[in-house]
Length: 161
Image (tube, rainbow, N blue to C red; front, side, top):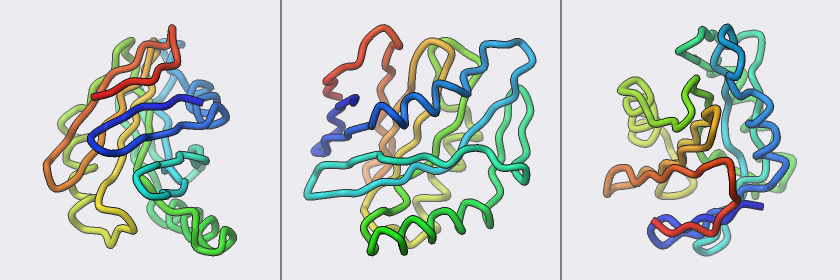
């Protein structure tokens, strides 16, 4: 399990989640971007990312873009929420980038800020995880804006932003 602190939140990412995202690394020169939604639970200031959705046949992707199908994603979010007795919630978005040390593009930033502003969220934040070929970018969006950190694949850290 990876543990990261961003602002006042401890964020825990299960190994199974890291493995799923890692399976979609764009290591082949022709691999398209992949992505989905982040699902989990929040207890006090502890955020547990327990599940991620994987690309569906209705998503659109290319080498440098990923657009998930909103209806498919919403059905996954609703299913997990209902079957967890309303404990498992939508926490944000994840996708891949074909770069070693990923960072959000302008399109990524617009998407996550739009998601934050336009949706009725269970928590006062959203997360954005970008899986690169050599590490992760983890972004935390709230009323203060975006706080992000990069994590190298070489270690699972207890990082503080």
